Image (tube, rainbow, N blue to C red):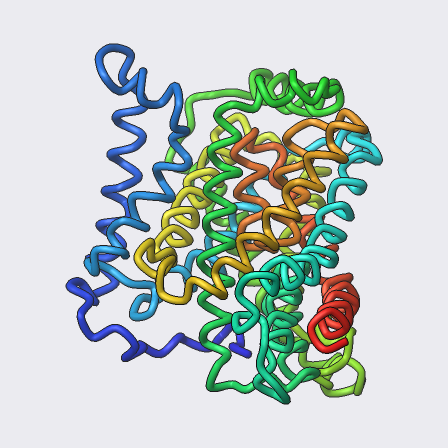
Amino acid sequence: MLSITEKIKSSTVNQFVFFKNDAIVFGLLMLSLGFVFYTESKTNGFWPKFYKYIPGLLMCYMIPAIFNSLGLISADVSETYYVASRYLLPASLVLLTISIDLKAVFNLGWKALVMFFTGTIGIVIGGPIAILIISTFSPESVGGAGFDAVWRGLATLAGSWIGGGANQAAMLEIYQFNQELYGGMVLVDIVVANIWMAVLLLGIGKRKKIDNWLKADNTAINELQQKVQTFTEKTIRIPSLTDFIIILAFAFVAVGVAHYGADIISNYLSDNFEAVSDPKSALSSFGSQFFWLISISTLLGILLSFTKAKNYEGAGASKIGSIFIYVLVATIGMKMDLGKIFENPGLILIGLVWMTIHALLLILVAKLIKAPYFFLAVGSQANVGGAASAPVVAAAFHPSLATVGALLAVFGYVVGTYGALLCAELMRIVAVG
């Protein structure tokens, strides 16, 4: 697993990428964001009608995906996602949390946790059900024997879709799936998870209709948004250069502290606790530096919210944090190759059926408990996307809600391996008998 301080080496996977220079890649990503924000600001003509149906955030995600699919850029040969996820994401969590009302976050209540665990259960039962369904007409897609067995590879998907990269690595170690075939599972992970994220982003644009259908009670969410909005209006001022420098200082000093703390804590736990250092252990997530990076960044943002630093919300702290989030969205979109959807149709179909079961269970429970679409989307993404994308989806509803996504995603790391183990054993029973 990559250390936070390591640089990602350029891959030779795709030799036909047109732009390999990250300065050019970043320029194209910013061009995409600039185009979306410019056209979304138009009040007349074609664009208002377009964005009435297609959310701007989805376009920030899809345009880089199209660039990637056309071979103009590629996440395989670019470090932009690594930089965005390791530096800009923790910085955004600090700035989006700096004005948070922690009591109001807790007042969101039990429905957030119910939807998170519903998402987890949807992944746990979705895997074996998908195998059962696909085996009825394409048994070769779910077959294999020994370490080549498809269910072993799908166990790594369960780890990724409940927790994250550390949990995925743990499942690969535990079930010893043939690493020569592992690339196919990584492909399913990227394609299906990104399709599902696109669907969730599309739903954000129609969240009022969805909430009306769910008969959802948005009172607690609206109160949290209103508190942050009121505080922003009370402290708003024309920001000076000094304000911007201090805001960036808060953000990136916190990122530095978080990296330092993540290195120390993860190394200490890995060196002194066998359960953490063992990749097969359910506690191996606590050795993940990314886990601690997100946890410490969120904690630092919360601590700053109890100081006068929160007054910098009036100078635009959350707006700068939102910029970082949008850059991250563009780099996530760059990982999506639309052409690969058809490369391994059998495995992709398993993943799509699996994710559909996850989605249907979330919709059913949300309908039963009248949970808002926000809880459905963030509860799902805290499982499937983890700490890199759950705050993105949460912030798309309102910047003040990014903390909720981060906290649930961190929780996903903790339960990820346990849920994935249960899912893997159920898939083994279904596949082998």
